[in-house]
Length: 362
Image (cartoon, rainbow, N blue to C red):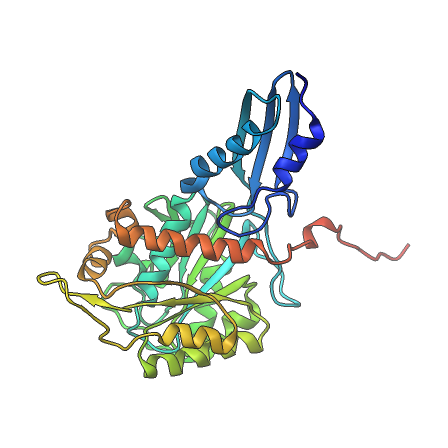
């Protein structure tokens, strides 16, 4: 019995990506369909890294093809293809960096840096090429959180190579100064240092560069949002009303400069006693959800107030690498997938498709 190619195409067209809720066929996600004898070969191309999802997606596609009359075998390849996506108008992409994600909060103490580091590690664990930049000039924490020591090397006296930790490229002002040396700088000096760290680092073919922003909406935040090609921003907050008030200011700042909000991460959402198991909403409940509804954005995920998150970050082995199969690491990975999916669904950057036009006098 020969296989009807139209039935194969219909079966593939009807399949929906469980992570996006949209058909794989949208955006040319179904490729290289081959019908030979009683077998079918197909490639499913995802626009986001999803190493942990490959087996489930392959099984889903194989089951759909097995239901087509005449199909007795199938070869399903599941791959990811991360593209560069649009940024603010008038700002060019950085060389070798496809997408920049700013992780921000309106105030300090809400776990923004811990979230940024674990988000970056989660994207890397899902198969992406990831870098992280510590943009907190006054209080750099990346060296401790990644357990990286040493200074970046300069191959030419003008640029510097990023350091590496847990398979990620990283740079921070903390690599260039002594650990207990305060940065007594005014705003222009700090913003200049940030731009140098960003543009003079030899990033190597990154799918995502995560930028851990300093808290607040001052000079550094404004410089980054106006001059740096940011694909989207993630807002970190706790459910507490005071934290939400400041987080809303951060969100509005990005909106004013044309940077999309990818979503909100609600940190320290609930504390579960390690002795008795009693759950208590120390900082209130539902604040992130209310903020998301007010501004029409997504809650990417909620994380507990858990001592292991702090201990693992302080030790230089954040949760995603310290306990990769644990509940907290899986939450970070789910957040990372949502961030990557939000980016994948935005318009692609097409500037690289057009040649540069040079006008010369002849």
